[in-house]
Image 1 (cartoon, rainbow, N blue to C red):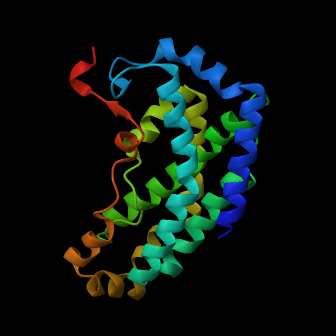
Image 2: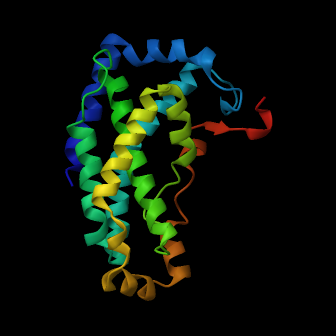
Length: 215
């Protein structure tokens, strides 16, 4: 994992944002379209939305680095490393994205791909009884980003993730003796203790989904 390269890409995108304010202007346009159920904790303004997006992007190398550390501790590195490498590739060598997306705005697309990839693999491991693989609950944060990116573009990114995961993590992965041995080896409470320190990303970044407020 080239965590240094991931962080350098973010640093350069931050420099671009300082000079061009591409992301800030884009978020200003998106703010009036936010669903009533989505809001910043305290006040729903562009500044807090900007902090949320920056944090969502900035968490990519942190989540990958932490996941690798947990995978090593849990002795499931061989299963998780290929997934993290694809997430890294999405971030460093992304597929074709809208030409007007540059700097941090382009990284938001790429961060969404990386986080959604890990979420999908995490869901498949969970459905086969393997426990959690992702060291942060990114579900609500990714729902907010999906809303920001808007359909059909966000759906196109989701479809790309689905195709990638289908090829990378087929059901046969969960049918062999290695995965069965892993499930038997890992104590459930011990596995939970590896993850309990990791919060929900959207809450950590000052955004929330308030279902009772939705109309």
